[in-house]
Length: 160
Image (tube, rainbow, N blue to C red; front, side, top):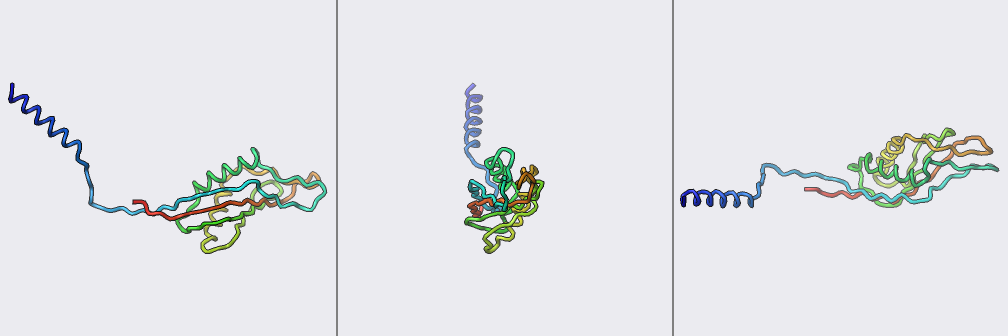
């Protein structure tokens, strides 16, 4: 009986010490770079007015807040910020046609590596499938421009 108890005690002690040891795999070291994004889209959006007696600005279903939310979500999802590390205030001009579709996106100011960021933003904005309700002049739909201001920061960080 003592032999069995001694054997069980040794097994239990051995098992409990085995649980405390960490397994460690030093066979390779993995380095990974990842850019951290901080995006602050400012409201309200600025509508570039057209000379007209009865001008009505373009509108997005759900309002500016809805567009801001979807733009923010898509920027985090689709920006390929591995090619640039930018920080600062940027203004994007969304060029809408008379059907409310975004046909062009222009970014300002131009700084080092901003062209790649501006190209990415064109891709992001085109991924948003809902059209705007076009601006109108005297009851007729017209092309228009909307300015979206944002503070953008992308920082490169090493993730071990």
